[in-house]
Every structure is written in structure tokens, then in C-alpha cells.
Image (cartoon, rainbow, N blue to C red; front, top):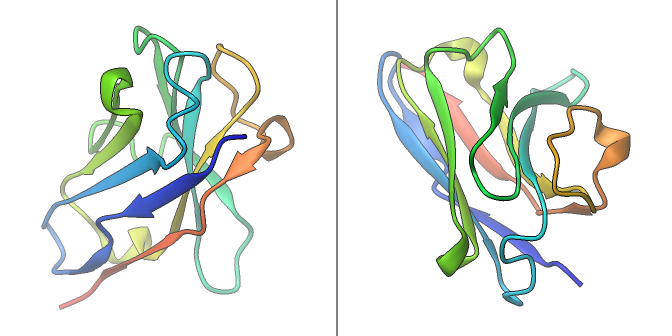
Length: 125
């Protein structure tokens, strides 16, 4: 069973950067599964942000974050990262990492079987 724990959220000024981390606390996902990041702003539906396949060779981003966010993974540490640069107030949301039971990238929530508890990111001056 995969158990995901996010960290790294916080308050940052517009234009600033944050790096989110997501660790599999039971050290089970290793290189078997793709990983994804989603976010949910207050009053809005949860949306896809980025995903990476099992070996890290392929990534996919939502148009709204392309060129500003970078997803990466370290399978030896059972951890996936989301580097967020040039942050905007519209990026304010709870960010969730998730894993589908497949090695290939997925963008739809329904494809994801395991979810973290979320970490708050607030972009404000």
C-alpha cells in the first residue's frame, strides 16, 4: 500500500519559488508507478498540475504551469518533487500528490489510486 506525505508548502510572495516534496512513507512505490501533482483552490474543483512516469523520462504539465513548474523524482528516496517558480496569486491552492497504479502518465483524477493529505501553498504579498 502506497502512503504519500507532502511537505514544503507555505506562504510566498508573487514571483517567488517553492519546492514541494512527496514521500512514500512506506517506501513501496519505488520506480513502479507514475506520480502526479494536483491542486484545489478554494471554491474550485481539483485540477491536474503535472505528472511524471515511473522512470522519470517523461513529464506532462498543465498549460497554466508550463515553463514555471518542474516535476522530478528520486526513486532511490521514494520521493517526487514539484519545483514551482515565478509563482502567481492564481497558484494559491492545496497541492496534492498522487499515484496511479500504472507506470505511465495519467492526467485524470479517476486514474489515481493513492493520494496524499495535501499541503497549502499561498501566493500573496
